Amino acid sequence: MKLIDPNHPAYRRLWVRIAIVAVCFGWAVVELVTGDPFWAVLAGGAGAYSFYMLFWTFNPQPPAIEPPVQLDAEDEDEPAATAEKPSKDGQAE
Image (cartoon, rainbow, N blue to C red; front, side, top):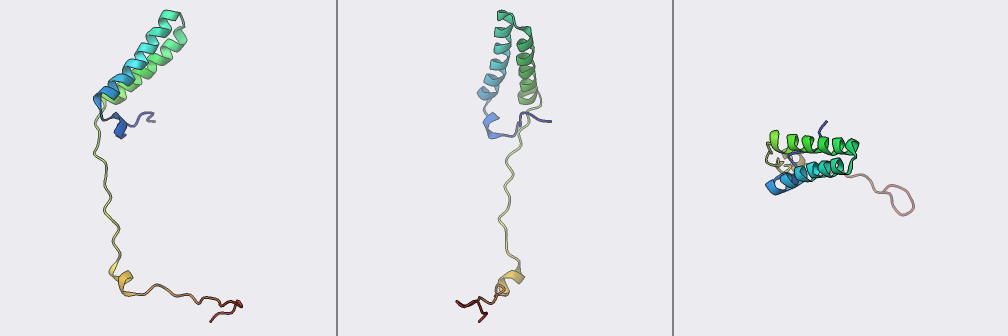
């Protein structure tokens, strides 16, 4: 399961990826200094995972552009199916 999609356009810039990893590890240090090792481990794990996804395995793919939909030749020759429209009194014309 991917929590971070490395193909998202927000992660293309290097400074964004560095900032995410630095904030996670920085918060882990803050939690260690204040004496809360549980949250330090969680923040450090988030930093390690973000480093793995955003640097170690980072290989962004260019966005896939789908070709425009073209109508078939059969669709162009045949008129659209005409359904009988009911008149004002509810009877078909």
